[in-house]
Length: 290
Ligand code: R5P
Image (cartoon, rainbow, N blue to C red; front, side):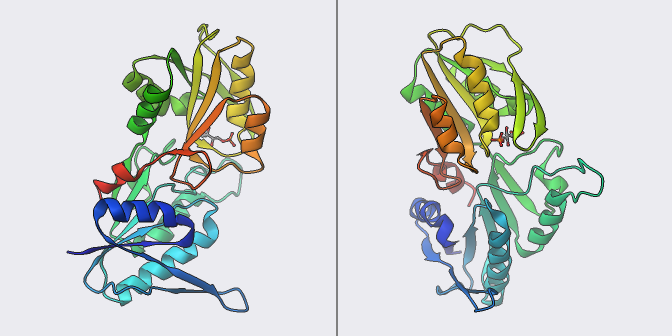
């Protein structure tokens, strides 16, 4: 079956890369607004009897979810088959329990909205903390990929004498696997989250960082406070260089500048979310499963 990649304007670059790797047709979904701000999507390519692969990274997700639902339903109407969602960053995963009385468990609700429109979901390093698997909430065929090997290759290519730090227990799955692939030591800090903009970090192990290249690895850099607190902690030990690597760089509220201002030498992300720090391309791992 012929494949066609349908990307939204905000996921165009990654969509294009994927189309080239798959040797697939590529089309950008047209999005317009009516005067009252209702949306109208338009698919300009011929999708009949083709396998449709929709690329939509769900950062700042609310509008993008509407685009997604309108597009997937239209694809079906137009005769596309096996409609796959490639959401390299799958938003709405962190609210995975009711932290305070009366709060919605958004991850479950959003999964229920998206699921019926697609036959398959492919994502990269989703924030699976309290959920053991993505299928707990997404009741369709899923493929969860990890950028760990790409992150490890990047570190091996550019740095020597490295120590890897994961900012909290949740980051162990990334930090430890990356460290193993690079063949270096890893330590995981203890994080206490006081609010969405305030965290406390404590380095548990007495690991020597002086003169080393310290690479902090996490799944998400959002407000940057997690990274900032780790950096403040390790700077006391005078490492040679501090590198922050996030699979998904959301960089909200000036996070990138804040990290630069406290003296982070290099900030690196994958192109799951477009940003100037995108030094790691995830299209090679997506290709295998599309
Ligand atoms: C949370 O548990 C994640 O793994 C990240 O550490 C977190 O999302 C980073 O958020 P922020 O940059 O706002 O501290």
